[in-house]
Length: 249
Ligand code: NAD
Image (cartoon, rainbow, N blue to C red; front, side, top):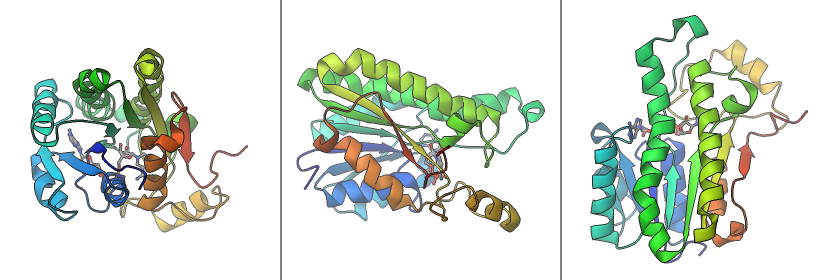
């Protein structure tokens, strides 16, 4: 059991076909008590209970600081500790540069980037008090190659911002034995892209993936468990690519 006696919070974890829930399920299988944090409409409590009574669901909007702080207060009251934060919540929009409105920019940047900051700020005092913690932030191959699959330039910018945020937090928090790392998934089959990529485009995408398949949520979950666990206890500030070889060049 890699995560025995650990408490893990997964933001955006209630989508049962998503990367967050796959990671929550794998963390629970490795002994963690998990907290599924998501928007009210995603019903995190009813999703958490499907993993067992020891787990918890909490409603929060990661773009709202008061909401993040209230969620962490509730988690501390019920679970008593926080060992792992998986900053997974994110949204995307297919847009060209000239189509991005102010509202689009705010929506996309706020969930991935502001949300990762607010949630990290909410958990850090509790991690610092116990001199341990692992924070995993979700960037994307879109940050590394400048989009080109689904999300617009504002999505690439949000995910590139996550890389900088995570590395800077890693530098600051290492002294407290708190690790901060990023995953950069390639194209993984979830609700975020379901039905949005035409067949001819998919053939083109696959021709650039050496493993010749798109990813499945458990491909990402395994890497998240690695970064959450002591297997990676001397890794901080790293970017772990999970993309079937898409970036080999
Ligand atoms: P998903 O749509 O299944 O999951 C996103 C979750 O975030 C949902 O449960 C949603 O309710 C939640 N969410 C949205 N706004 C929120 C908010 N303000 N507060 C709290 N929760 C909120 O998509 P997914 O594919 O599982 O994506 C998970 C993460 O992985 C995202 O950050 C996404 O950008 C990133 N990502 C996905 C892929 C992919 O191909 N699927 C590739 C690279 C990166």
